[in-house]
Image 1 (cartoon, rainbow, N blue to C red):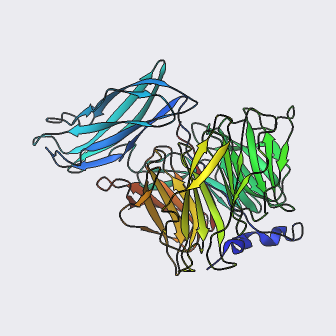
Image 2 (tube, one colour):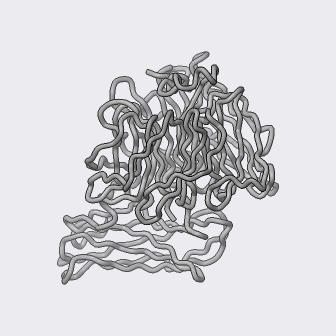
Image 3 (cartoon, one colour):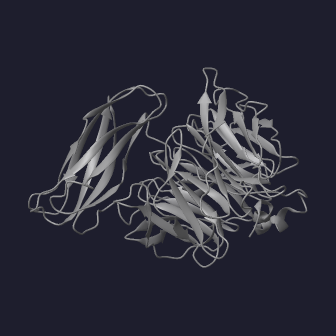
Amino acid sequence: MRRAGMRHARWAGLILAALPLLAGCKGFWSAPSTGTNFSLSGSPTSLSISPGATSGNTSTISVTPANSFTGTVDLTCSVSGPTSATSPTTCGLSSTSVDITGTTAMTATLTATTTTTTTAGAYTITVSGTSGSETETTTVCAVVTSGTCSGTAGTSGFFYVLSNSSIAGYTTSSSALTAISGSSYSVSGASAIAVAPSGTFLYVASVGNGIVLYTINSTTGALTQGNAIFGDSASGALQIDPSGKWLLDASLAGNGTLTAYPITSSGAQDTTRAVQQVFPAGNAIQEMAISPNGALISVALGSTGTQSFSFNANSNTPIGTGGSLITKPAGPVGQGAAISVAIDPQSRLLYIGELAAFTSNTNSGALRVFTITTDSSGASSLSELSASPYAPLGTDPHAILPDATGKFVYVASFQTGSAGAITGYSVATTALTQIGTTVSTGTQPYGLAEDSTDSFVLVVNNQGTVPLDAYTFDSTTVGQLDPASVSGSLASNPIAIVAIPKQ
């Protein structure tokens, strides 16, 4: 079983001559962005019901604010289904409006109603939320007896998979993996990837070639390489702040460097503004995350621990200095390390994946969870949940995925042997509760993403014969992942995956 430093064997030979202290690299998943002022999502996104059923026929509709939005969002629903259906499925909402007064998502219950004579088949329920001139939608699939909903089963948004030598874009349709036009694109010694919150461009870091900008075709998902090439040739993790004003680069160079590059709306470097650099407590860069409210950056630094910095996108020096350090686990000496990090969509919780965090079991990985409190000055403080750390199945928790609603979080871990595992938890601000059973992945799962339709959770596996696994959300056990059959070829030994964010 590899430890944190060993993960860099994929490309260490390419950089050793230029960087003797190679210690970490990895792409990461960036939490999906919301709409302009709010977004809608359903949980679960699919229902499997019998005609006339009075249970198992509801979905929670969450209205999640963004950009400091407050106000009333009016909710409506409509149903489309089989032509000439008898007693077709109808829909109703427990509340036809929700009031957004802060950063917390508000909810309503969607109910799909059938009778004993309702025609079997798949019904697509569209829920719309309107405030002023803005309307956002989400869909829930209601399958009566049997059927498949178009757009909610078997079809995904665009996502991009990074290997050492290529980046390739894909989508799924009718459970078949389809490469985006022009894929794959050659990359030499790739180390990290990030997609913009707008979904219009992404960055790929590679050894010796710096950080390269690609624009994304909104219709086809095809990539076009841009002219902007940033200077760092030892990037370990990338992120773009939610405002789209800064590219953040956590570098292995020297003793470790965290750089904020000012960027324009098209993703190119903004030469009218200065670049800022600060120096983390170590150079064993593993992953980096920024909170959706743009107030906090956290960097996993291997055996050094996890360091967090305040952030203000409107400042000319956006990264706050003197970031707080969460030390490595209290496990066996020399074996603890922070290897993954994520922040939930409501900026409430910081998640850290660690090695050997339990003194009673040196082979157990852990998920540590901290509440985030941001004061009026923008400074954030962290407080670990009393039940933390949690023990997901597996040894090396290399990827953490909070779902788009923030109600669930998934942890992908290596296991001793061949298959990896994903453990899911339902989320409250005071505790996590494991969901159902873990699901198996391929060997050494390295990255997780949720696609923009909220239909699939995708995992890339760095070793073995199954580089990509896909999962859908169970219609009975809320938050449980069900393996989905997605056929097609994918480059071997992927190291990261990102998906176009939900808009």
